[in-house]
Length: 228
Image (cartoon, rainbow, N blue to C red; front, top):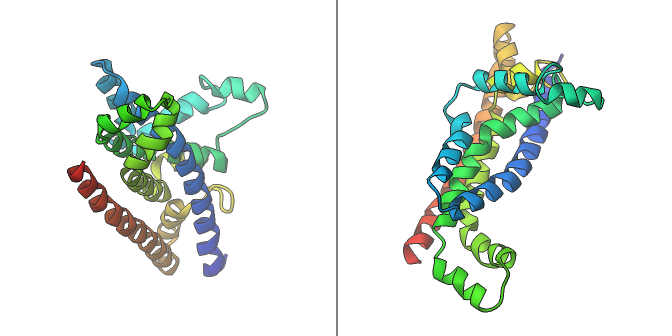
């Protein structure tokens, strides 16, 4: 395989996997963050801790959990297999792995951003006759948008660099499930230092760019919170 294809194929696959994972997390993460930020119960922090576990657990542990759940003999995998759906050793499995591992970054950033919204502004919307859904989309979400976007960008960068859980559930199939991080591992194992270096540089530059954008959003979000 040429160095050109050995770089662009896993890069494009990684971008596809990361984008899908980010879209999933943007929806589920923000929804979960909103519910937790409004849930006045001691159990809210318990649920938050459970949902944040992928941030601290080794990725291989998360990969094992996913195999137990989604493997053909797994809790949900057996049921999916009856429907003709197999997520193991597929790029969709890589999406699930990346989503689970990067989910806490969206959850925590979005929850902090939503909890920082001035309740008086939300109440003003309710007084004007807005429904709770309308208050969320027209008041809460716009005011918390910078913090949420920063979290989404960080989650995208984390999904782009995901390795352990992806390798366990999606495997290492060139052109099908071989993401950037897995391709780097294979290049190092094969002694192809040139390909490994190029892949590392592409990954590093992409993540640095994302972190710079997130870093520019975060200070503005912090200043907005101070002004509220």
